[in-house]
Image (cartoon, rainbow, N blue to C red):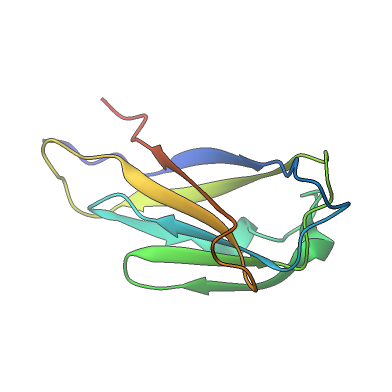
Length: 117
C-alpha cells in the first residue's frame, strides 16, 4: 500500500441561524487515521476568514480552529492540508464537529473521507 504525500481538503462553514452572527465557534476536525495536519495555512492570507481566527490548536488526532464569530449567510472557506504518514487499509471517514463555544448544544456534525484511492 503506497503513501500519498499530501492531500488538500476544502472546508466550508455557513451559518444560517436566527442571529446576525454566532458567538465564538469551534471547528473540531478529527484527522483521518494515518494522517497528520499542516495547520500553517489556517488563518493565513489570502483566506477571507483570517481575521475571524482566534486560535488554532493541533493535537495528535485532531485540529481545533477557534473562530471569533461566523456572520450569518457568509461562507467561510479554507483548506486543511493533510500528510499521510502511515498507510491504513479500509480507512474510515473522519468527523468534523462545529459548535458554539458558549452553547455547545448548538452544533453540527459531518464527515469527510480521503480523496486518495
